[in-house]
Image (cartoon, rainbow, N blue to C red; front, top):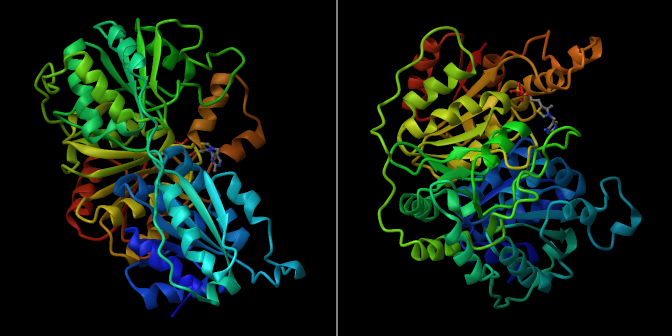
Length: 512
Ligand SMILES: Cc1ncc(C[n+]2csc(CCOP(=O)(O)OP(=O)(O)O)c2C)c(N)n1
């Protein structure tokens, strides 16, 4: 005999789920106990719900199957929403288990009661409330299926406490994800006719790694088209020998200029590119008004099938080969800046590493060099909600235990979620966090400079991060992670080599 919570865990384990990033409360304790009585799930405690949800995002992107999150009622879910938003944008498969008050107690309006459905609705492609203990297993099966449908989705199950505890009949349930929509053959033909040496293939989603990227490389070799990667990508492979992707710039006039340079654009695995923000005097929808654009597959489409069709159509045979041999990168020297940080990382990166690229204004120089580093995987901030790096890295390291994870993080962003370091230490994960410590919200100051506003006292105080200055080595130590502060490229290289060699986590404060 089993209770509702145990049925939920049984279904999860049966579907191949192995990890639960949790921050439980009283209403989730039956699920916690069920993880022990049923077995098969590794519980990972996050000291803030955004650690749990960001880790589930990173895990889902790399494992290709969902992790669970276990969050306490509406307030716990609310704390995790920013990174569920990033997960939704990444099309990462995530299954949220949200405890709820006993169904008979809810009408008493106890202090933690909140409109869970409203909160879940902003980030979930699917949500369901368990109606009885017997409903727990089928509800869980539907939720997992929703998370695994299409490229992946955030799906949420709300579990009233009484239904978790009540005895539940054994039921045979099937997890039946929805398949990806079929590719339109006419679009494939149209796309094939557009691609030549003046055209570009703008890629996102599954087109940025593995088979998708290899197919894109073959298509580029066959047609001469330039490959471009979407800006806020979920998972991308880069490095020597892999197809070279140009990266779409952040600022709209630069992105527009890049895309305007091509006659004929095929978009596959992502939506038509738009600016991060709308500025009255700047471009916003980069491909609007053009008649030489084919949207072959969107972010919920079957990018792989589309590329397979396209490769066949253009007669793509030869795999990608770089036009010129790529020399290993030299190690930069001198005082640190974003360029030198990117240079040191690209030069020392071990093959097969995973780089969580969340350093906002300091990430771009690394991106420009990534093609010259050994082959590796990058995961980025998809939804622009900062404060995800250490959590993404946590999830990535659990999904890929044999790969080194390096989180290139900014100090402002890292301060949202520094307790993620504690979970890295507790789980003994090989994560190196490099904090690009420019001691300000630099991107906001850049935006102000671009807007031509003269910063007053408030503007300076609200975009500067000190005094007091954050002491990242002390913060890391407090969370159980050894740290070093460096101010030169030479010292960064030395510290990074140590971090890469050590099995456990390490933090490097790169001050500039
Ligand atoms: C959840 C969330 N809160 C606030 C913002 C607004 N915001 C965007 S960038 C930024 C500061 C970035 O500073 P930092 O992380 O230090 O990176 P830098 O710009 O210095 O490279 C802020 C506050 C956001 N994007 N997401």
